[in-house]
Length: 389
Ligand code: SF4
Ligand code: SF4
Image (cartoon, rainbow, N blue to C red; front, side, top):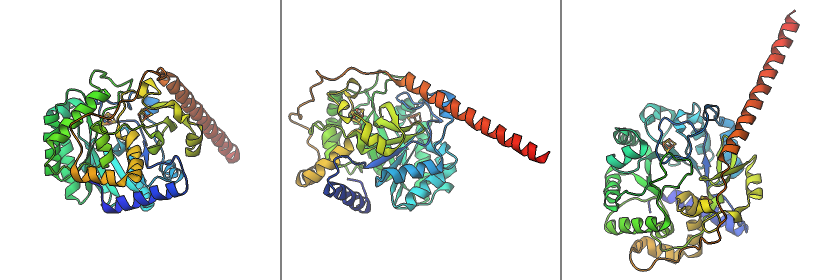
């Protein structure tokens, strides 16, 4: 299902090695957010509502590459914010590709054509263009009239220069299955792979009305997959994850499967929830209370079915049940009949709202660093003028 043989072999070997080494928790994809600043303000975004002092922060090239080395995952996704706004993005990608890691550079494509010269085509590099459906849905989702045409132009320009391009589509409530199917037909015509996932209900997203709950997600994906039975859509997910979206698997998430490094540090517990930060990857793995998160355990996780939480679970399930996974890939996802039992939510702990305190803490750190840097510069200037005298 839409992933190159090279990538499947490399990632499969990595997973096998982790299992043989008896590692219970290991990362599959590093989510590297080098900045939060974006040139769009999408209605379902939970990443850009920070004060300017935070939006102006960047991870440096060295910090990005250190995170890649520290984490060790075979794949690196670079979301944001808009990564193409980062001045060192070309070198960041080059450094990761040089390490033999697969890079998925996420972009809303507004700047893609202009910035293509920063990159070289490689079997290790994919542009993942944010495209939430056909024109009507995409423009509404990104709150920009003409956003669709810009994204399509970016995709075509990148493909014309020999780059591998996928699109990432977030699905919200009110997006009819028929329209999603037509959108997937379009991606097949464009010759791009698709990563598709229900939107996570970020508590701070400007529009809270359009997030799907689990039951609606499963019903919607069953309808979409039924419409796609004879189609050749290139969905870049494992067969088990698609089966999960259609309600045939009752998975628990694997939040450490896609750990997140951003300007705050290593985010606890996952890409979607920021409930604390660790200074190192090791600290993240060792100090996060993993059992406190996931559907049925924590209110904020109740409706989550996002790929960044469950693709690693699906990969693990494929290793355990390869024949079942192959059968789904061969026959397609079941779209009728009873669904797998739903997780009981009656004992989940209530949501904690820590965003404001986290932001205050980070702002204090930024101010303290600025004050230190200013004092250091002043001391150097004083020394220089003393020696000149
Ligand atoms: S393009 Fe991505 S980061 Fe930017 S506002 Fe939209 S969802 Fe958020
Ligand atoms: S269910 Fe898992 S992946 Fe989803 S928000 Fe909760 S911890 Fe994160």
